[in-house]
Length: 328
Image 1: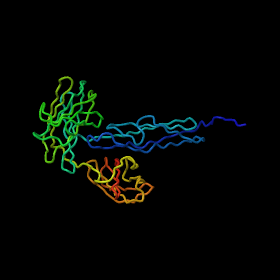
Image 2: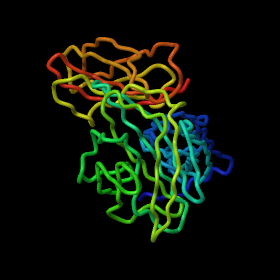
Image 3: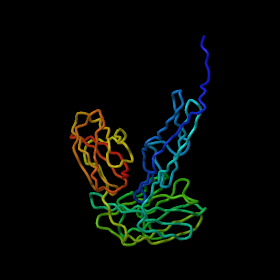
Image 4: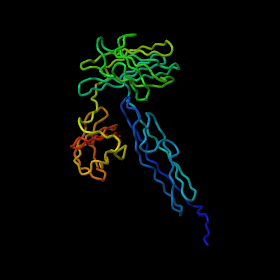
């Protein structure tokens, strides 16, 4: 016969240690960023084995963390019933926009200007509607006689938020422009959307006239200037081959300077690895022979903290890319 008794260990204790706060800087308009972090370490003097770790606040490792301060808390519980908790913060900071104009309860922000290989500039403008009345449409000035390369006329532009906008390119009222008209529940009460359009080569306006119409007949007009917005190069994967975006994984993320890349999809192949900063500039490249084991990548020591893209490409053109954060 077996007799089951509860452990009597009145002098036992448990302790849990969290990592230090993580602080990440991103470009304006980048949005949420993926963050992997090390789980807390828990120790217990309970004679019975087993310590349960539970997330009680915040997001798990690998989640997309928003542009704000997110508190993450864990609870550790051992087999003797002892409980301890610890917390840390993940702070994602967005760079200031190039220009901001606030008219009443509506704010316009020129986030950044990027240039593709064809020398066409793409403008990203965020509209923040703090009014109770929803946005009907937003119009953004085009140079006289020109049309935007994209989005094309009568297409549906999908904002990063997932909201849909019907595009008129060009639009003639209230001035020559490109128009984004909401097709669904539009932004209001502090919500925002990013509107993006591309101009032909050599067209670089100094000022951009913008107007928003809210329900029913409220208009908010402003002028954004581009003087303090340096043109940045777009990140584009190398031409040719097939792109697979989900299998490549790097860790730890954030990293202090040493990365490990899972290149097992490319095993026994020569892999060209390129690292781009958030502006799309190539900052490092190297060759690796892929294996089943994670490959160590030592980042150059003078890279500043921030968001980066790692691209892996084989000689046959197959490639994958993943974002990571450098935090020293």
